[in-house]
Image 1 (cartoon, rainbow, N blue to C red):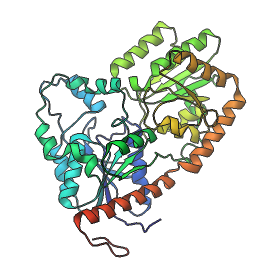
Image 2 (image 1 turned 90 degrees about the vertical axis):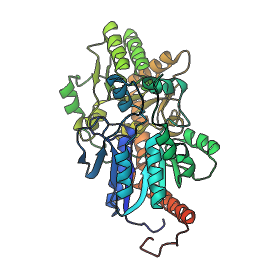
Image 3 (image 1 turned 90 degrees about the horizontal axis):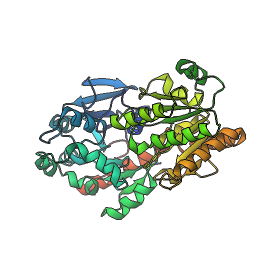
Image 4 (image 1 turned 60 degrees about the horizontal axis):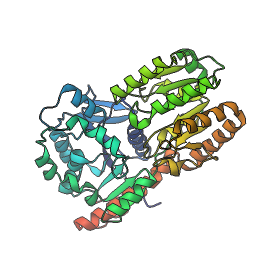
Length: 434
């Protein structure tokens, strides 16, 4: 690989709190940790959304947060909470000035678009610094139904923030980026066809294989009242219609009717409280309360996050839309077999019959398909072992964070070269930068 250039990479996600953890937060933190090990000085700059502290360290990486608003008239407290949870197009002038003033920046890395992405774009251009954008899903490859859910809180609200979007060039973030990074193959293909440049690359998410290699499953079962010999199915994702836990509950109910004894654990932050209420009502209506556990999202540093994988016999990701599926990598690292939806980035991640089993969540018989896959693996321990071992090998060989970081560094170097040509800068000498 080319010579690594030390320096400060400023990561800008929309929000970043340990109590509301998801795939994007995992990616930002693990990339930052790798950059620290390589001698860099990563910094996470974000909004105060869902947070109570302006500054803290998470996983050894400094996090700075700034006040923000949603520039729409007539938003209720519930609307603002929904936007905080998912997809809110926020504005933070304090964050922009922080990016403008931050010393010794090597490169800006935006993990968000819209107004906040525009702030990163403008700060980088004013400072003549390179900037890259990661698409974590939901740009070119998002279902219409999900988009409608995300926009519902601002429906029929007057938006007074459009001048700021124009000022920061929010619509030109992807066009002007020195490198666009897609975590999913399906989004990569659509981005390449939509954007007017070739600075688009695929970089999958990664996993800390060692972290998930020796979970304490027995401790997790004891803590949450799961009998030692019970067959445990695990799903770990946001409680959100996109993640499709209701279909899994329907399949689980059919398994019980067919005589398959199993327990189900649903873990994740509730980004859609109304959907979570539907799940709880279904559990009550079907009499599943003694077999189903619904746990809130876990902090990234919680032992339960790792131990849950060790407690489970099978991991299921039934999403209607999934740009990548980082939880599949975590399940593989723990040696778990996986059943996943044949959608989005999962289609390139999982090989059906080799590293997991697929079902089609859009098929008329989707519930039956899912119930059949889970029932088969409940009855075939040797198949579970084979799929779990194949997944573990896949994670170690191709998705360890150290490997992903090396690939990311190559993309950073490409972005820096493009920025030098854009700004007419002299190529840096060995060991330094202009």
